[in-house]
Image (cartoon, rainbow, N blue to C red; front, side):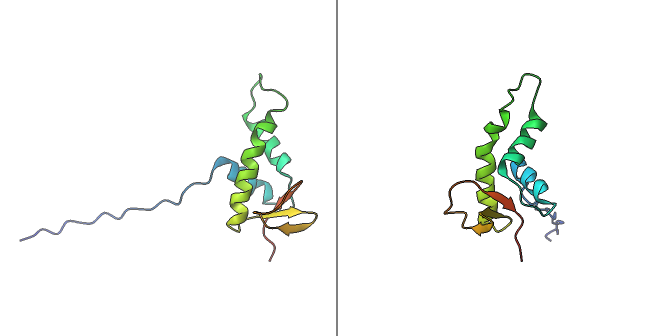
Length: 102
């Protein structure tokens, strides 16, 4: 006789967001448009030590842009340029971020 072994239910955890994604999403919770500079500056303030340079936030600008592009391509945020949502695959210059408008 074959014994029935209880099957273990494995919980599949949702992948956690990158910490930079968390900062972006928290900054956009208010519903306002937010500049990527402000997000990078917040990250730098939270991670700064006494010996950190004042322009530490510049180190985080590339990560903020990369994650913003990723989020925009997935439809979780919009990239705003000159007051209008733009294609995340085709824009240049200064931009802001916001939650998608319906």
